[in-house]
Amino acid sequence: MANRLTTQDASFYFLEASSTPMHLGSLAVFRTPRSGFSYENLLSLVEQRLVLVPRYRQKVREVAFGLARPVWVDDPDFDITYHIRRSALPKPGSDEQLHDLVARLTSRPLDRTRPLWEMYLVEGLTKNRFAIFTKSHSALVDGEKALEIGQVILDASKSPPTMAEELWMPAREPRESALVFDAITEMIVRPGEGVEVLKGAVAGVAGVAGGVVKATGKVLSAVRTAAQTAPSSPLNTPISRNRRFAVAKTELSDYRKIHNRFGCSINDVVLAVVTGALRNWLLSRGEPVTASSTVRAMVPMSVYVSNERAGYDEYADRLTGDHATDGDPDDSPRSEVSSFLIDLPVGEPNAVVRISHIAHATDAHAKQSPGVTAHTLMRISGFAPASLHAMGARAGSRLSQRLFNLIITNAPGPQFPLYVGGARMLEMFPVSPLFENQALSIGLTSYDGFVCFGLNADRGAMPDVDVITALLLEALEELVDASNDSRV
Image (cartoon, rainbow, N blue to C red; front, side, top):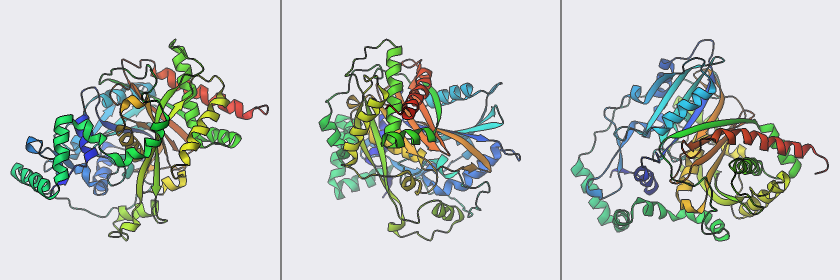
């Protein structure tokens, strides 16, 4: 039988429209080592690591007449130089120029006749730095079985481990008649598959995506306590394909200080910072903000159940070809995403009261779902955040976008340096996709003592996205000041 896309993979594949390219990205900035770092270095490294992400050599083949969901097939003409590209910034090579380049690259759809990913080596950055921007289709990365390519090229040491040699030969691409035969056979063996396809044909793929009830059930309790539709907001408006991208870099120690002072979680602090920034952004636009004003956020929380061995030790084993745990399903980390809706109190002028409201709301959710620590999250193989943001986007797609104003994904990362080909990674910013009529998505990743925000926005609807990044810094400073005030 063909390696068929899952229901949700297929929903991402078909839901892509000119205004909503369904790929996610990550921007990593590195210090150039004394030995240098070249395009050829990156090509060689990725080629060695593709064994860890086999789907990155596969493309999507649709089935004639829509008889079944598309299938993954090996690309017989796979050309790594097509997927890994080189770009250089004009002088002076500023961060603003880099972010503008990322916005333009994010705006472009992926080539659906090839494996659905691209990677860019961006040279010419000031201060002896370079960047790697990756984008992968949301149908390609599920965060569990299929990891994001940027995750597997990073190492915990300057000296990358020796890779086991691999000779890849593409499997023969199936004929159209074989795909049709497989589809008909599945309809006979599993009639539910045929019913699903017919529903998709009649009601559209969005209906199929909504049929993934397992994960949606995780947010039903939150939906019952919320209004049926999200509050009216300038964050929800028709969007184009063109994007803006902005970042903010903050220190993790500030979040820990606030967390210790007010007895809340780090995630509560993050949401309070975002709330303060959104409040002041709305005021800067002259939007009506009353004491009861809220912005509803969809917050996917990644939950991992893992054994003690999973982590960088296991990752090194995979790189060197020592698959001691192969064949034992109990040795593989398992993951799920538990998501909830939260009304961020943007109408509340007091930062301490805001964080109190948020902590109370998230505590109610925590009592219904298992908790998870950053340490547990980091025990999955490789650098987790990029794949966790992919899982967050999947969780958001399972709900009607009328139920929330924006998605905020928060993926903890390791608090120690990581390297690519000997070059130290300085920071990593996620680039989450936008859904229809949603002008902003916020992703953040903690890494090596910092919390890095990536804001992906519609170019027309959010020309002032840079204002929000500045206001994030102000909102964090406001909470730090409150934590220092003994009268609070």
